[in-house]
Structure formats: structure tokens, C-alpha cells
Length: 217
Image (cartoon, rainbow, N blue to C red; front, side, top):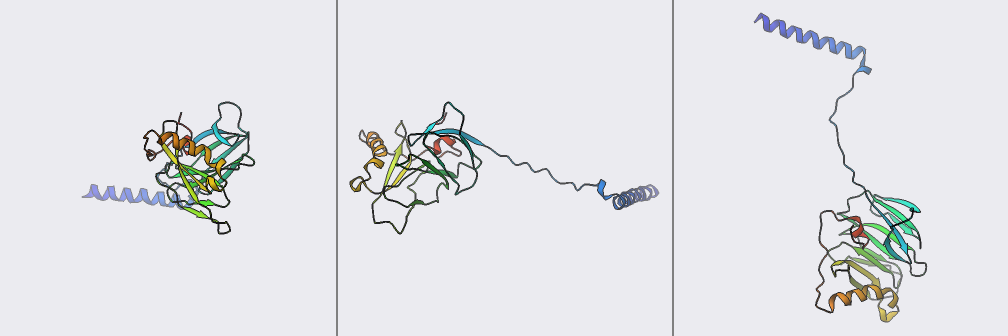
């Protein structure tokens, strides 16, 4: 019993000494906390604007570097420019709306929520491409526009695998033939021999190339 009391008194004395030392020298004590580890995965791709078409840049230094980290961000690449995109976002939930200005061949990229974001159409013959989605996106048209058909064309890769949709405000018959030609040609090629449109393969985490309609490395 005496041994237990002696040990208890020793512990109390030691604790009391530490408390007094803490009061006299608080700067020497640091609050302990658990280490929090956050993993950031950066996906990078270098692309070029070749006459209004998105291509993988195989040579040359980028003119600009763009970090895409928030839904709603947009960026325009002028004809002939090379840009390095860094995706600091979960690309399993996000994708890009890609619009080409047919007068200047400038390409605008907008980061959007993959399954819930609407495609906004603000001019006749405007064409927006959205890749790696399993269903036709919802569309909203500017109230100032005259009524036109909203055309949705499935997009296919070189293996006739469906990889997204092209949304256009206006039909070929109403003057949007140039805008429709490329996607329509591929659609005819991939369906005339019995190819059935298939939804894009839903991967847990697609490579960023696929968000631009480009093959993975």
C-alpha cells in the first residue's frame, strides 16, 4: 500500500512540475495534432489549335499554361497556339464544353459538371462538343434567339466507339451545313454498316485526353 502511495505521489509531483513549467514557459510547448495527408493528382496535356481543331501538341513549347481547378472556368486558344492544360480536379466528375468560332478558328474550353451541367446556346449554328458523357446533355437556349432546331449528333472515335455528343443550334437546311459536316460524316460512316452507337465506357477515372476527344497515350 505504501509503495502505491509513493508512486502516486511521484506521478502527481511530476505532473505538477510539468504544469508549472508549462505556465512559466508556454512557448516551449506545442499542441500535438494528427498529421493530415491530402493527395493531389495533376493531369497534364499539351494541345494545339490547328485550324480550329484540337490536336495533341507533339513539339514546341506551350504559349501558355492553364490550371483548371474549378467548375465554370473557361479559356480560349487562338489559332496556331499551343497550350498546356493542368487539370487539378476530379476528371471522373468533370468534362469540357468545346466551342469553335468558325470565323476566327479560336477554340473555347469550359470546365463543366459532367452529368448535370446544361449546354448553353447563344447564337445560330453554334456548336458545342461534350465528351465522356453517357446521355445527351440538357440544353438551354438564349431567349433572344429566333427558333431553330436543336441538333444532337453522337460523336465517334476512329474505332466507331461513341465518345460524346455534338450539340448544334440550327440544321443543315437552315444554313449550318459547315458546322455539321465533320460529325455527321463520322456518324454515317459508323452506322451505315450496322454499327450501333454505344455509350462511352464509364471509367472510374478517364484520362484527360478523352475530355478533348483525343485518344489516350
